[in-house]
Every structure is written in structure tokens, then in C-alpha cells.
Amino acid sequence: MSVAKRVLIVDDEAPIREMIAVALEMAGYDCIEAENAQQAHAAVLDHKPDMVLLDWMMPGTSGIDFARRLRRDETTANVPIIMLTAKAEEDNKIQGLEAGVDDYITKPFSPRELVARLKTVLRRTTPKGIEEPVTIDELTLDPISHRVTSEDQSVDLGPTEFRLLQFFMTHPDRAYSRNQLLDMVWGGNVYVEERTVDVHIRRLRKALGDRHDYLIQTVRGTGYRFSARAN
Image 1 (tube, one colour):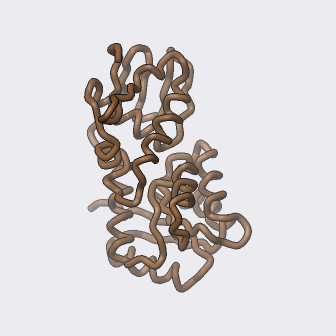
Image 2 (image 1 turned 90 degrees about the horizontal axis):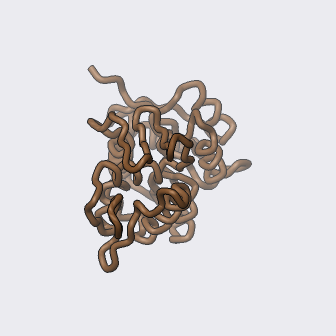
């Protein structure tokens, strides 16, 4: 019997936490709750949840600031985060994704939609079958240790850039459209804008530096390709 996935629900409104917990427990998840960022940080360290559902608007430390804090800390950098918010504007979505949030769901939402989105993110952040390190032109990605090295020097990547690079390195020499990359890396989430792909491509190229940024090639009229061959 598989162990239930543990979800941390962070929201300052108790009725919302309860509604979410009931829906997730009926779907087979184990839930823990926190009403602010301080409680949530302690819960992350103590209980090591498989997923954090995080409200954007909270008294004290906001959800977006807490998400950034989790991403900065090596021990919590890879915990999947879904942001819960009443903010529907595109700029706020981009801000959340830039902070390393894996998905975004706008209130009000149905429990059924939340469960579906949560399953998608967990499936996406738990890659199966790709466990061996991949090396292309002295750039190495190790999916087990979650490390990337360029000529034995560590490359610092955010979680989305890591997934993007992992996809590229395991699917080289083929051009992908932005929509295909959204499907493969973000899980086909229609709430993510196509230009978000460009944002993360730019950040990935910058992180790879002069030595390896050539590997990510822009294919005019199509999208992007990862290849050690000349563009």
C-alpha cells in the first residue's frame, strides 16, 4: 500500500483551510495546516510535506515572500508549491511563477479542480524512470542529487529551470514549440502564459553562462531546441 502524499495548507482563514482539507482527505491525501508563514515554515521543517498550498494574501509575511524563502533554502528549494489567490491579473501570475511557484489557482475554485491541479503538479515534480546523470559537452545534470555542473563547477538553477533543462537534456536535437514545452515541463497548465516559457529560457541561458548557453537554440517560427550542434 502506497503512503499518502502529505499536503501543507497555508491560509489565514480557517474555513478555507477546512474546506481544502476535507476535499484533499477525501481524495486520499494527508493534510496539515498553518495559518501564517511562521507556522508554515515550522511545519515544512517538521513534517516535510510533498506539496504546499499557499495563500498569496496573509498578515505578516505574504505568500509570495514565503515562497521565495522556501526556494532560497536548499532543504526546501524543491518542495512543489501551488499558490492560492484572489489575484487574477496576469502580472501577479508572472510574479508568482518567477518566485518559483509551480502552479497558480484563483479563488473561488472547486475542490475538484484543486485536486486535479494538485495531482498534475505532483506527477510533474516526481519524474519516473530518468535517474541516470546526463552529460552533454561537459554539462552534467544529476536528477537524483538534483545538481547541475558545468565543467565540474556547480550551476545554480531554480526548480522550473532545472525541470526545463532536464527535459531538454533528455530530448536533445528536436525543436519544441512553447506550447509543447508548457505541456511537457509545466504539465499542460492552460493558466500559464506562453511568454512564461521565454522568461525561464532566458534565466536558464543566463545560469548556464557563456560556456553552455549556446546549447539552447532559438528556432525561428517554432520555439526552442537543445543541441550541441551548430544552430
